[in-house]
Amino acid sequence: MKAVILAAGEGTRLRPFTNSEPKGMLPIANRPILEYIIEALAQNKIRDIIMVVGYQKERIMSYFEDGKDFNVKISYIVQKKQVGKAGTAFALSMAKNKVKSDFLVLPGDNLIDAQTVADMIKGKEKYKIAIVQSDIPSKYGVVELSGNVVRSIIEKPEVEISNLISTGIYKLPVNIFDDISMIMKSGKYDMTSVIQHILQKRKIVAVKTRGLWQDVVYPWDMIGINSLALRNAESHTSGKIERNVTLKGRVSIGKGTVIKSGSYIVGPVKIGDGCEIGPSVTIYPSTSIGNNVRIGPNSIIEHSIIMSDVNIGGAGHISNSVIGEGVEIGPLFCSTSISTNIEMDNELHKAEHVGALIGERTKIGDQVSIIGGTIIGAMCNISSQKVISKRLPDRSTVL
Image (cartoon, rainbow, N blue to C red):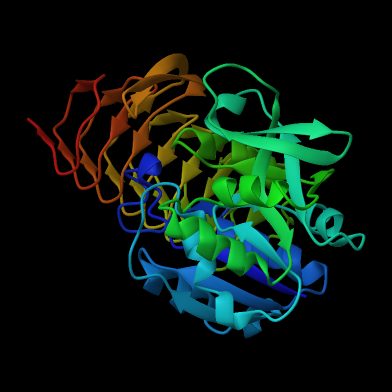
């Protein structure tokens, strides 16, 4: 069986972290989201993968190449144009000439595990869709069932119908492309419309997967999903650990990393290659730190994602935050977490326990505080001794 991964989207709701990265390449526990999907397929002996790429495609293609290093074979299809936010059927149509029998379709921006794939490939049904329960079903395609058979899918309903949603993971036969072509001729390019069309003539089985499925929709979603992924991350220690360092629980330390004296780390924590941590740095659970990161003395990091090439000055406190690639933060920085409402897509979204969300290559001076839930765009400059409580667009300067 082949698998088609749809990884062409821009991930605009995850800006500023998708300014230069496709959504599927965002690091969760120091690994791209797409890598989890590919691993889940390989563990189920699905090694022939077709990946539909578009936005920032070079980032994906240069990382995975032909798939050999990941024990799979990957071929790429370039989607040269977007057809709106709901263009999943259009993206899948790109693979028409690449599949000859039943195949899996997976979104390239969801965290899944091997059990989810295993649930989908069991049985002989031609049409299957993976569903899960959601606390916010109105943000997804809501599924109505009769037993285990799909009755309807309603995209983002205004009234509550069910808490069961489509994950966007399908098992489909090749004649799905005829249905997609017919629907696209009517001016619709989403898979929900295709599924609704198929339901008029064929049975689609809903699979309530027992495995992991998590969608990364907004920047603050990354924090909780990172924590979830770290629970299953492997633990290994390389690099140099100086005297009087305390490591508790599952802590992974990469090659060339130095953990300096007096540091205290409680897992699950994952630290990449070539980092310099400390002295006397405290890192609390559910934190991932990328490659080539410098964290100055007496800093505290907890429940956060620190991407690669970040420099954090001494005596800082970072909690429940996402710090983008190449960010430079001066000493005595503070961003603790709060529960708040964050505006996105002209709507207010409840975010629980969120700190700072800082885009790539932003520079922050000494003694800066960022109020929890504040999104700082990419390539901003913030002078010393500032308190930031409002969203900053990309390339903003605060003097």
